[in-house]
Image 1: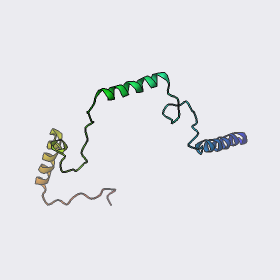
Image 2: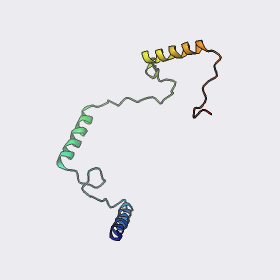
Image 3: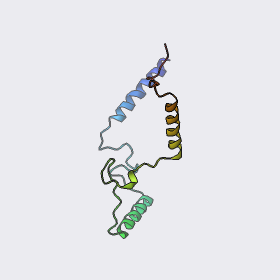
Image 4: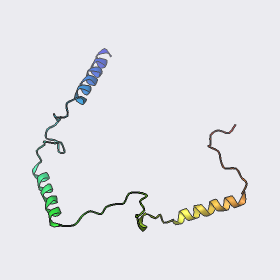
Length: 112
């Protein structure tokens, strides 16, 4: 049991030391996506292909999405009510018509 605890504690120390490694020294220098890593041939080929596609489309800019709540959002920002939402609203109105003076439900929890 003591040996097991010693191994676990040593493992935690090694994990801590690995986590605090400097940012300039990657753990695996060949890992894709790390700065300074040498791309493999398929990666380099794919990147060249993407660059060629972008160069072949001069003057084409990606569509800009308007900010939420913007005044010039246009008709695309309007929410169309679905059939289920209409049915829900109809049920709520019908329920309210049955008991118009009913107090709104509380926060919930166990009744006393």
